[in-house]
Image (tube, rainbow, N blue to C red; front, side, top):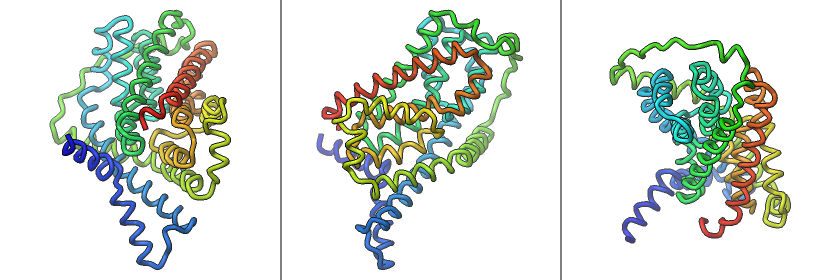
Length: 337
């Protein structure tokens, strides 16, 4: 048992967490005559460590997920979803969202395509919720910082929000609040040509490079904010606003996250710094979920596809779900960290 624990710890801290990289950067700066314990140098260490770590993990994960995704083009995904009905369809749709490494804005075109193809609107909303919130990349990145328990529970509760949200929208028969041009658009059901292994590898490479170009600016911004929080913001401030003494910390974090725009890769460095400074786990995760799922730009895009009543219901379901998740994680924080 001790051997298995040692292997897992090595995987979590040295492979996913890349703690060796942190030590290497500190040693390099020390060799240049800089003191890693100094505040400014500590910010530099945090910045380079997180940028390099997240970039390596991002490129690897996007390549792997895109290779898997090459077997599930929109036409095939539509056929798979079309075989299921009721809550089972919502579950499959939410799970399908986990293999799409997209931010919320990138998920909306697929949501529109699925809806135009005639899939139930509740099923497509389950996909729209889960895709930016709980992709496989978030599982491994969260595992590298917060540990396996937190990462797995985060993904499970994210999927629950997606399934419940889509089911509620389905039961309320909200199809009439989808813009008519989408419902009447239809789709051409074209079989995707068979791809060779080389074609799939090339597709995965192109997807990796394309996603990296889109995401990297937000990684830089997120890591920069994280470095400032980590080394310059007093712990007392963070604890006062987002710590256990503020019962409204989860609500505040959720509301702060909504107008921001980033994906999971850009928010994780901020979350890491906030946790280090004493913010509660659930409060941090609520912030991450709000940023990735309810960003203002994605809501503007979604408004082009759905009417205000459906958009308001979607936002309300996600917001309530995120707040509940935040308080749930705060309640069990001592058991999982």
